[in-house]
Image 1 (cartoon, rainbow, N blue to C red):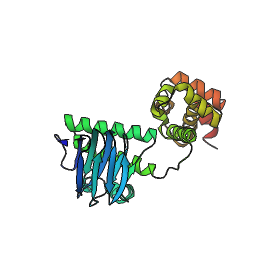
Image 2: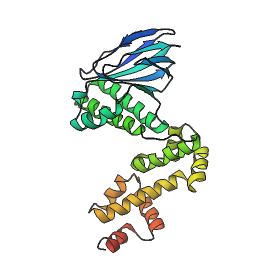
Image 3: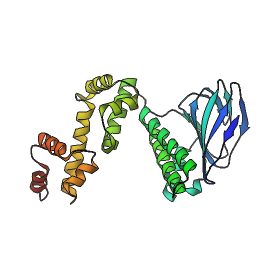
Image 4: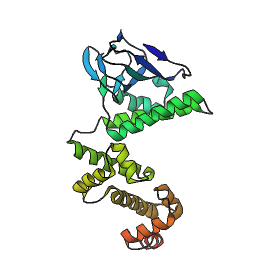
Length: 269
């Protein structure tokens, strides 16, 4: 086993742990919280005496004091995230951490959440390596975001694969409408073709994902027009529209009047 642990923060530590086939990490425990991400390989782990399978893209959630061990069935690379809970904000300490670490487990996130968490892990590795201004603060912020994503994943219910995919996609559009660039971007996150994405979403909701994205954005725009004094160009930017002229055209097509007329007509009512 080889641990690469350079450039770690004393409070938040992210490093790679490499294991050869048939390697065994003997039972042990830690005083801090740990999340292990399986980059590649497979094996089994023991968490408090319970055996669970490990495979690529899964996470081990290990609360402080929990005895655990790993038996590798193949060459395995693991990212080890260890942190002192006291380094994070009080709300994260009191609400999120107890929820995420309520028990030791192996977790498989959905496609979108897994993609977001992997990106946050990349960001942590970058910050540790480059140590730019406020790098430790950035580590804390990205860790908090990662813990929130994991905590939300606990509430998701199982369903058939296509139903799960479109529900994940719908939820992703509703929460990340400002950050979506194209149907290709959405398809890549699900690991399916754009054509198949359009097909299964339309089967469930009778519209394409991008049409639903526009509906969500326009709905948010209408709310902002009536409840704030923000300039229309600011609202357009905030909702993810790249072109003001496209925004005006879509708004009038879906609402029947321009944003200015909508605000003037309904704001006083």
